[in-house]
Amino acid sequence: MDINEVIEHLPHRYPFLLVDRVIDCEPGKSIHAYKNISINEPFFVGHFPNFPVMPGVLITEALAQAAGILSFKTLGVKPDNSFLFYLVGVDRARFKKPVSAGDQLHLHVQIQRQMRNIWTYKAEAKVDGEIVAEAGLMCAKRELA
Image 1: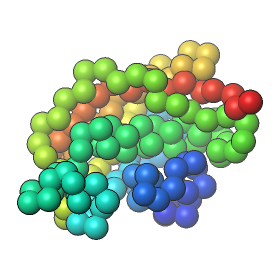
Image 2: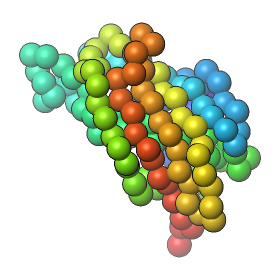
Image 3: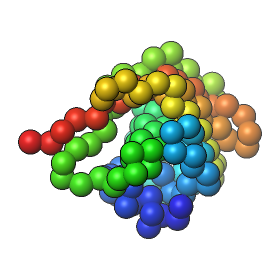
Image 4: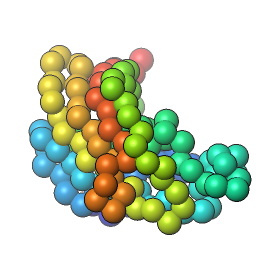
């Protein structure tokens, strides 16, 4: 999926769209996507000016956005005004190495369980094949009023 398809499958937009491309997606199972980390990212202005590091919460958000794409693809729908997936839980988050400008952050997410409107995922972020972050994610499908 190129950036245009990514935009079709996520409600996020700049500066909070954190997925650039989907390499592989097997609905109901897993997704592999990536985010190119540029020195022009707005968070680098303050985190940290002399040693730019992507905040861990944004790595987690990028993984959650990949999970969102996987969930929409699994249901065979695109975001609209009827429902969204909200990140409602992060378990066992670990940040093993800093992510910096020039890195390509690979996002690997697997569905572990889907029960009613609650979905759980195993998520890993990698740079150059090495795990830089991992977490268990939980999302809820919520109807919009």
